[in-house]
Length: 96
Image (cartoon, rainbow, N blue to C red; front, side, top):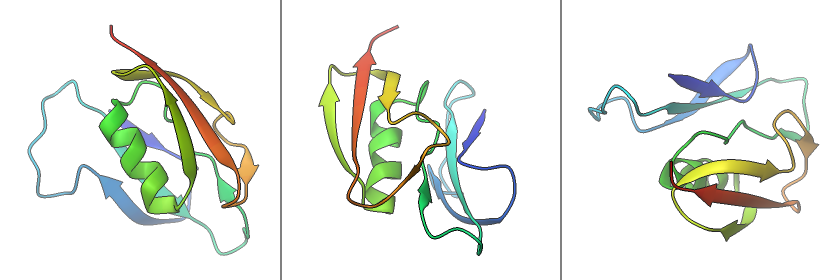
């Protein structure tokens, strides 16, 4: 399955990288940028494993705090919210 931060634009990054084999159940995170936007659009991290979600946040330079481990169950700010790099993201993770 594919998770992206917006519907159209230029794909600038993905995780896991294109050359890595992944199990059929793992989600691929894709970041898309548009020239008409000065802010970052918060990606949909819910449902991603913690490693993939943190890779997305690190790529975008977004600070974060974690609660739990496993799969992302909730995120703040929510997907689609326009944020600056000064915004701190909070992820609530759990197993199952």
